[in-house]
Image 1 (cartoon, rainbow, N blue to C red):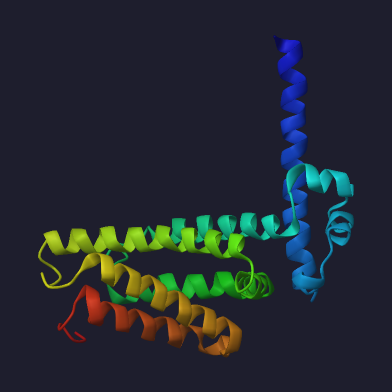
Image 2 (image 1 turned 135 degrees about the vertical axis):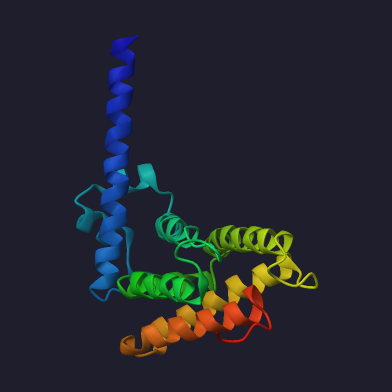
Length: 211
């Protein structure tokens, strides 16, 4: 059994190393100004230091690389976003603004990757669906938080948590994407605070007004 397990373990480790190298190489190339639509598999493989055949052993095509990068980005962001609760130790409008500020900083470092994802999503259904599924995780989380707030009597009973969860998530994502694409980085903190205030006083504490 050991003689069978060790080679299999070695293959899995090698595959994971190749995948990581390809993902990192793609991000580097995009950061250096390469256009994803013009970026060939051979160039990605060369940058990763692997053979073209090794690339295809892990990824059926280059769009799948973007799908994996979307998942990795959203996993990291999801972990940060779900730490916030309206009444938690870092809750409230200032805590929510801090969440958005961290998201903006995160995307600033990955602006070329985000641009490539947005561009390819417009014509590739696989990437578009993968992006939608990742966003739906955030929608579900926002919905659950709103349901908790509603059960506790902190938001009005006439708020629909499902609809509001979508509006909060989709709206926030659009604001952040537009700020990264066209906004001045020096204004990120102002945008984060304004976005937080609009969500806090518009939904989480509707009608409360600034303290």
